Length: 349
Length: 121
Image (cartoon, rainbow over all chains, first blue to last red; front, side, top):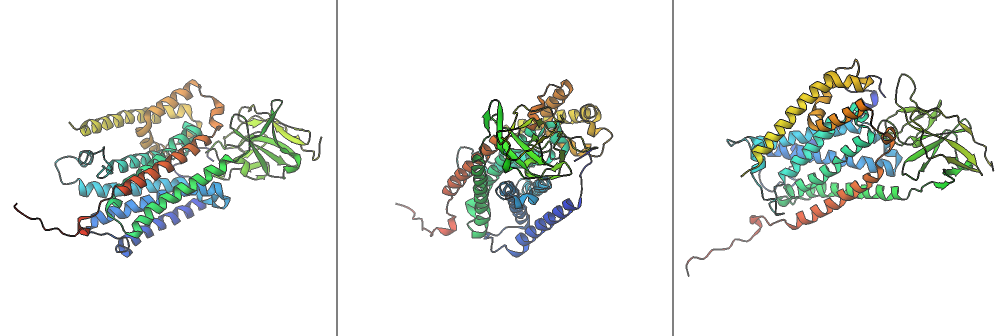
């Protein structure tokens, strides 16, 4: 949560997260460069420049694989949610590692001609109509552009400026980038290298990402939609509510609303956090404030406003109890609109 | 004829226009449309690469915010459906890439038994 923008909002958790990440990157490069050259199955002798390029390339692929696994893992099992926190720093670091890989490639394979390295890269192989011998470099260029774009738009300013839905759509480029990276690897290094370690790293990593995403997508499809009745949408029976927690329901237009029970009274706000559209309904209320499980943004459930001096707001909804069930009006109130909480009378008819 | 020089020239023009937009937006526009940016200057350096890359989108959002023409509810509508489609498309693309990519592998000549090439006749 921010009042005035600062370059990076450091806190102990972020230092810890980033420290582990940097140690992991250093360890991966060290192992790749000095411990496992034989196990990685470099079938032909390579010089240090190429070895470095491969180390940073493999590291970038592994980091991207881990990043893409975190999202579905957190959806499938909430114990992985802490990994989601600060994932943007992970993405920025991945862009730097990938750029280092590209630098080594340009400085070796395309550095010894009268053309500029970039022009050489674009002109060296233009056989786009075939699979064997496809200019796989261009897939890497595309992925690097995507990763740079995502890293360059990772500051919270961009989230607020573009709005979370537009920002999210822009950041869906990560999927295209990953598919391009897999193509870059399969049509590049894996055409020659048949070592078990390399193939397991790349193909196994890609398979893991696909399986986890498909599993999370499949689980999400099963989410029930609220039942509409006389214009209002039924959320759950009154007995289903627990003090301090919410019930989430999907509205007919696909939006989700979180109905909280706090001090025996019901309040409803949009389930999407104003920061990154994190699931507010999965947070717990403390002192009237619900905390988003993704990044810790807080909102008063009675008016959808962040506590002063913060300025974030989410829409609120009208709630009613009728026939032993809780209903919400699907028409959202403008963000920050105060709505009087509705007493929950268990067993009301 | 190679398109590489034209592509590089296009990218240079794109970046040049982006630099102009960045200068205008960070020196003047950002204070008009975002209260959290007023009095905050160091973070603006981090914003520059993004503006260079997506300056048309920056201009569009800047205009929207100045004109207050965006739908406020759109901000709170997560794009979950598109998320599933994106994940599905990525998985299918990866499966096809791996299948066809590995099918196109060729044996390295070192694995092929040498054949004496006959001359004449």
